Amino acid sequence: MVINTENLTFDFGKQTVVKSLSLKVPEGSIYGFLGPNGAGKTTTIKLLLNLLQIQEGNIHIFGQELHSNRLSILSQIGSLIEQPAIYLHLTGKENLLNRALLLQVSAKRVDEMLELVHLTNAANKKAGQYSLGMKQRLGIALALLADPKLLLLDEPTNGLDPNGIIEVRELLIKLVNEHKKTVFISSHLLAEVERMATHVGIINYGELLFQGSIKDLEGMSKPSVQIETDNTADTANFLTRNNITVSDVNDHHIYVPYTSKQQMGEINALLNRSGYPVYSINKQHKDLEKLFLDITQKA
Amino acid sequence: MPLLLCLLVFAGFYSKSAQLANEPGVMLWIQFSGAILGVMGSLLLPMLIVFIGYSVNSIEHKADTWKSLFSLPIAKLSIYSAKFLYALFLVFLCLALFVVFTVSFGTLLGEIKPELKFHDYSIAGTLTQLYFKLFLSSLGILAIQFLLSLLFRDFLKPMGIGFVATITGVILAANNWQYAYLFPYSHPMLALRSLPNHKQQTPANGMPTITVDLFTKEILVSLIVAVVIFTAGYFIVLKKSVK
Image (cartoon, rainbow over all chains, first blue to last red):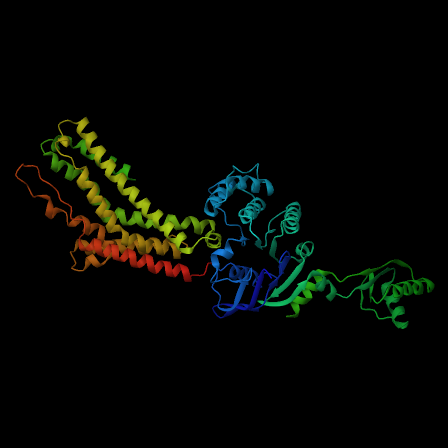
């Protein structure tokens, strides 16, 4: 486990922001840390970086206790928290050079990073004139500068256009696959994380509601058969009369819990035989987005 | 800023050169540098320190970089002390510039208006000592202002506290309050105050020497305050959560 927390709890005054959180982030994973705004994601990341003092519980990163091994752990972490922290009066390149100086990284690496996040052309422009997406990319470059083993990214795709989001996603997948990094990425958008994450943790009101691999999450959603037909209400009644459970009906589709392929064929044949037109029939996983909402709203 | 102030005094002296022509070189220098020192010691130096303390920290507040700075593999002590040393260096630089400009403008005046006898006396050594004393006396304020600026994001709090304390310091020092030496914001003024007592010792050769007593008690208090606040500040930084 790269990150292992036990019973992590944090209060801001009377408000408990993080409740007995036990994160398990395996090595070489992209861990999507999901939750609505204000769920405690940023607080958790700040705790992981030792920016906030641990009040209860403990954190182990790379198998070492965080507080007593702060420097050796931090030297292997690159982070991006909320809006990227950039000196606006310096150019993008100067920002990187400045950080390179602090981290004792060669200046050559700065150019590589600029290249990587496609900022080479804007390298000598003041960071204050950067667009939100460019700032975000510069922030990612800063996080990657020291070639860390673990990346902690807090909503890194905030403010990026679709193209930028895809680029970041591909970059992260590449880092994990080719360079054996571990990425811990927080987001309030499941759709964004779902395409790259190998593991997911879902947090709301400071509590971890789900943790596991993305397959486990998908497993939680039972597939259903979606039938598109002309008169959904009549068709649904007909199916019910034939002892087939209908889970949901709307103006265009009928949903029936999926059991097997044979069942799907039988339903299709039954409807056709009885004169109900079937425009389409297919197996469907419950939308992860919906599942995410279910999980976060249940609590 | 040192340049501006020296220029002003330079201009003043230039225009009044006729009246000053009869003064001996020493008195000219004392008046010349005294005019600069007076403004400097009482009001400008503390305000300058407030501003330096603020600007060194505000750059991180503004760019919101405290969090990334503290998540780098750098000891908190290094970050804290590097910042402090830089502020210290800025104060030192500013005071050193004052010395340089005072001396060079004085000399320049002597060149332009030969009737002013600036050449008769060299004040550089004394002035250096004096400004060094001023520097030492400002350390206490610097440590306090530095910590305030580190803790508060905005300019108004450290500025307001610094301003009120400076005024109080000036009043205390001006009223010769017995315990003024315990109050850091009075130190620069006190540091200069102890001077006149030494000024008029006229030795046999007729050239008065000005001795600067470096380690007076306000300097010691200033140093102690600086060390204590600096250490306390480190522990505050250590415990403080970065939001």
